[in-house]
Length: 247
Image (tube, rainbow, N blue to C red; front, side, top):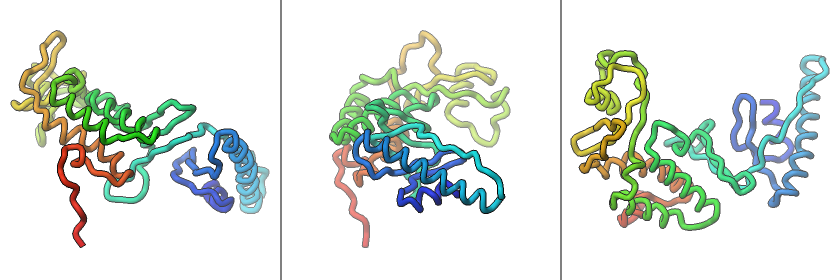
């Protein structure tokens, strides 16, 4: 808290903070100037915090701050229904390389199409290009069957026995039971019009994939996370009229 207060006292906006890191919005517009500003801020903030430690505890502080990364572009999705950013979920450009932390693009249990869409949209947003046009391309490829290999879920069975799932039976457990698995391990499956279907090594992809499931349950939430920050809506990509809020 003291470190955040010190940055704010120095006139810098703190975007997000956790146990051992802070994300701050520098005033500089270019990399060289940002490096200089960060060095100056580090010295000022270290001095402010050190003074408070001496005053409060009467000891000589050894606190040091380190500039870990400098993002030229940064995105942090809001918590659903709120205004604050999601903890440890962000993306940004570091020396023109896209870095993604905690978002769907780096989750191993989500279908590959989620990462394709998220990385593609973020890349276009950071480049100030049309992300809606890219979303439409991915939707068209999904419906055209061009991305079927990227629709596979891979989820770990947390319980040692499938019989332990009694209160609810999530899709990956249904698929595991169809595959004859006993429990533990990772089950690979797709959502079809018949429900979750396991995909064993060498199995052909089913021909009745539930494409609407992937539109509504995978692509929509991934896209809306980004579109929300742009003031756009997913239904625009579907060719549906934008809904205006009721007064």
